[in-house]
Amino acid sequence: MRISVIRKPIRFSPDFRRVILRYFDLNPDRVISLIEKIIPLTEEEAQGALNSTLRDFAKRHRSITRKFLENYGRVKAIADARNIEHDDLSMTKKLLIGSFFSLEYSIESAAFFNPSVLESPDQTGLEEGCKRIIVSFRATGEGHISSLVFRSGIIDKEKNLNFLPVNRYVEEPEIVKRHVYQKNDFINKLREMNVTEEHILLVMNRLGDQFIYGELLNAVDGILNEKHSYDSERKRSISEIVWLAESHYEIEFSKDTEISERVIFPISYSERKGIEDARFVKFIEDDGRTLYYGTYTAYDGHTVIPKLIETRDFYNFKIRPLHGVGAQNKNLALFPRKIKGRYAMLSRIDGINSYVGLSENINIWDAPILIQTPQSFWEYIQIGNCGSPIETKEGWLIITHGVGPMRQYSLGASLFDLDDPTKQIARLSEPLLAPNEEEREGYVPNVVYSCGSIIHDGFLLLPYAMADTQSAFALVNVEELLAKLREKK
Image 1 (spheres, rainbow, N blue to C red):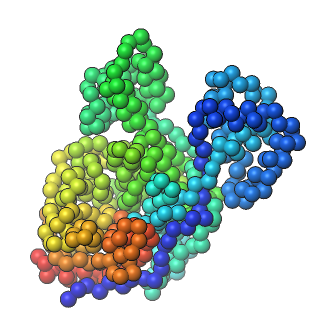
Image 2 (cartoon, rainbow, N blue to C red):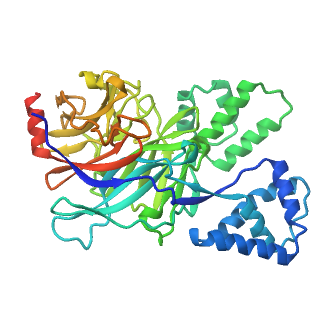
Image 3 (cartoon, helix red, strand yellow):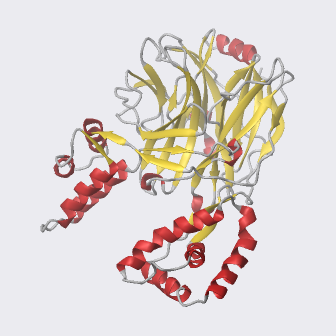
């Protein structure tokens, strides 16, 4: 008999009204042409044009003039390089120029999917039996560029889900801080990326044991300015070194933003084509302190790089890449606590099978151990996890996904030993959740997928995406699920 799955009626769908203000990148000749059109305007003409723009767009963004000024600053260097006199421009003309190099980007116009749910850091002011939750989503807009967004809600004692209304404002972080790099770790990651050793040392030998982003750029500039001829291979290696450095950063959101207003849009060059499939987990440290980790994939259009995002409050985030042969490809998911003094993480390094890694360093993952291969017809193409393992009295409960005929994705479940997560206890032979007629239609048909679940009051709260277009929730009785798994021992 199949396990009972209660599909909740709530749906999260793309909303093309959710827009952020981005820099409009034009080639230098067009930049100069635009600036030269604005400089001769009278103050009255410039003010009229700016007023018209503000009337149309100011109500759609917070601090829109600050963004205009930032984007003016981005083209200022181009004007300086062409010897365009603009230092004496009025603030009105600077803002007007900035408005021409700004555009709105609808972050979730194409899809709103691959959710991950976890307990909120704030559990105050709730009735007994209720829990405040945060759900992360992959939002996708024009050009299939993905970003990370959030929603907040409450699951009550009757298992009803109530989410806060979503404000139309969407905010990017106010502060971006670059990282302090450890040379040895940095070199090891470059080797994993198969950057030529000679080229690695060419740059790294100019830096100390620790360095910052600006020091790296100075070293690169020094090499490129030397009177030597560098072939395309050397230039590509140097680009990859800079690319890796740009993938470390910290961000901070304003305290006056609601969580649904915060969007983590690609910031570094390594992410320019998307931030994909964050798997968040509430992590309990050995001393009892709580923090939240998420693993996700950065994509630059050619290469994927697994990354780790860390936060304690969902205002401040630290992002860095993961290293090691056990941190390759997609589908990484961190366990919610250490096991015998070591971090543990699920992976799918070969794109087909599931692995687990154990490490004393959360950033470095070597020697992954194979734990599952495709077994049933509905997962013959590939298997993987659907988020971090969940601790139960009988073992680590792992929600899995499998890909079968017609590239249909279905969700399954497995149980692994609490003390030895390489040891499988049981595994469902049939899907826990497969797409029904309503769920199969969309951008990518016949796909259900999740990036993380939790247990609340004896029920698995399982968020899942439908056809890579929208998202929903299901509930599964944990005892019923564990009983079914016990039958599979």
